[in-house]
Length: 256
Picture 1 (cartoon, rainbow, N blue to C red):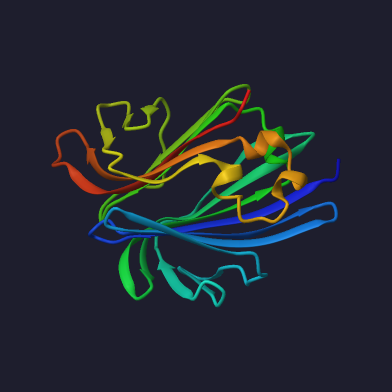
Picture 2: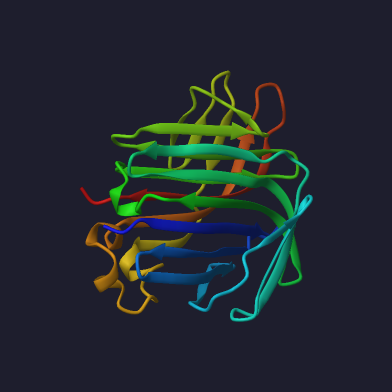
């Protein structure tokens, strides 16, 4: 099997009213297959829309504490500004390849489509094919408010691993489900899952726009099921007033 190299950017913004813009952009190289992609998932109120492009585009550019990205194909541009220190972890490494996670901005002030909000930015570099991952379920998410941020990655399966960061600091011993995270010491993040942004098998949702997708990639990738939410969220810290903000989070399940 040829080696796979995947560069994937994820950037989002949520307005005070809860309207969402999520950008995915990057490139995959797998033998003779070279795929460039960008997509935009948005919500206004309860209405969710999506756009896609397979044209080659420039990656986001980071200069100091600012990330900028624009897409002529999608007709959008935006910028993310942040002071918090970035996070970096090697999520997985084996003879098959590795996954490098760079959380560039766990909490950012964001302008997108000339609307402002709070956002998040990360970049993932993979050299292992997603269908080869020893994983059953992934819980991923991020919460931002004007004061606080929480980021989490929970791998369940053979390569089980849980990473939680609050305000840039790693937290061990946290317990979580789709609608809450319990922290040692009594802190708690609750999420109402009030809006489903996308749900279904990747072969019929995020990857469905790729021509001949079922001939290119194995069924185990196409059958991965994703449910992504936008939640009104509340962070309760012991002895302090509760802080409200917005969370984007998901459950991704691999077929057995």
